[in-house]
Length: 390
Ligand SMILES: *Cc1c(COP(=O)(O)O)cnc(C)c1O
Image (cartoon, rainbow, N blue to C red; front, side, top):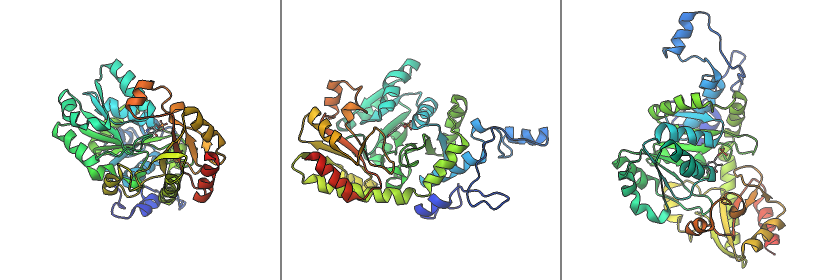
């Protein structure tokens, strides 16, 4: 992979994968072209038959702007290879179709789209999917024995910020010949590197922290050259390659990833601490708090605790909505990871489609408020929460 492998993360964010041009461009140029010209049949055959690594056709990902950001993404997760996609869901779809056909075991809460894909759509193709909650991990071996090629999880989870032991789960998966894929969207490569902990693949909704400005939709998948090569064939024909323009925008955002996420980590922690003592707040879910059940594990496997936190208010669903509606700085929106702070009440958005029984089983209540902390001054955000809580 990239020559910059042993450099520190901030340096890799800026320099890894960047290519110049004949004019001395300081940044990777955008090649909007959909195809590339060759002087001879012999020269194009060298590329088609893999003897030369030239560019060919943009949907194949064989475009210098796309390859440049993939090289940077691989470097950020310490992976041999990476693929960029048109969305986080496109990355997961290609992952499950390429490497999950022998069955997928999903641990804990996952993103709504992921749950729908795994519980409703993949089974229509005859793919067996199984689900385990955090307190059912003792059943993982039994699930794997029933046949599964892939274990999938998010950590920390949405919206409960539950933390799962990546290394231990990787061991169980590997003992049964299965792969482990971790959705690292919430943590970002700044706070957690699943591959270094034993996972085989990492997926990202680059729409969130990697893009970081709520202005692009993309996804990413990182892993070994072999596994990524398998997924690449599926991406090519699913047609879920992003445009070179989006890749350039993503590369630009990655230059500031460390600065943004470290600031968001610090602000989220300050907010978690301030909210912990508030009389209207029953519980704060944030792995950075020593009282949080995931804290010890997070200290072992994370470098920072992230910019996401969930408050459980001392109010019913409607009372909680009223608090959300009084916020002025936090905008009501279901995404995360941007420069502007966002708030969502999971039962009204991300978990709206989940049945009340299933919500109860998963511990998702109407009094939960999920915050994505942006780059505003944390004191202004704390003041906003305090005025809304009244
Ligand atoms: C948003 C999100 C996704 C899906 O990503 P899109 O870019 O919206 O397709 C997957 N996983 C997590 C954890 C997310 O937050």
